[in-house]
Length: 318
Image (cartoon, rainbow, N blue to C red):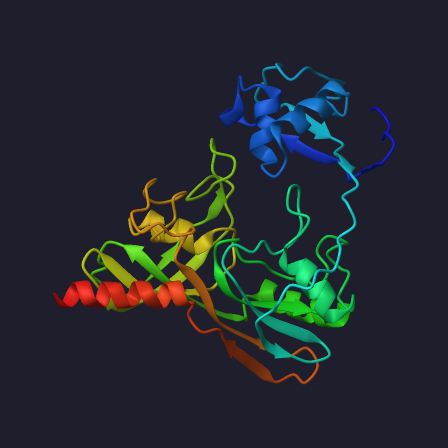
């Protein structure tokens, strides 16, 4: 395989096996499905540069896979720009020497990635904490132990040192952290409460989407409880047992109650002109990494969410 060029560093080599699902699929399309965070042009470049082997031999992007093909790839990662602290106001719900709990606004990306190197929560936290953050997740994700989607609002915990990071990460892995969300969904849910227990994995054909019930999906469990019913909509509380990507959005869509404003998993047109899904991480509770005591914080509903509830209550009264 070719060596890294100037300004590049190799990530660890990844190995993939093509099963019958991907028989006769182009190599670049297969990699795109397996590595959804990478652009197709980037993947085609690493194939062209000889950084992708099929059964030990370099192949072209147009190579058609056969069942059982072993695909290995070295992913040269261009060094990202330095992540700069930025004086962005933070809505702080709790803070001490170990952790910071913030109420993330709608539209804010949690950590820098391609195309999002400024204006992220990490930029704001770097400024606020003057660089005193855990380094476990690398230079682009200091302090970040979990994340919520760009258009989801609410509580997020940030760790100021590695000991706190490890303690919170262990609780996330054990599913012992309390995470309660508020959402407005399409349709009227008849039962007062329920549980969606369905594995979640990458969508087989749409690489930026997740899907429930897919082959090789990871276990995912969401408990929901109806808070209010309106004409054509339901206000619910969702409690996460696991924390998969887009979990609440995927699970509620799977029972035919997609989130209001979610044009990815719900109706393509949003008549309420919202900025993405109506989803708010309201409650987060954990065992404090230093005191060992249970700490729970609550983020108030954002104004747009409160206004929607008022609007639907008024419509339901008429």
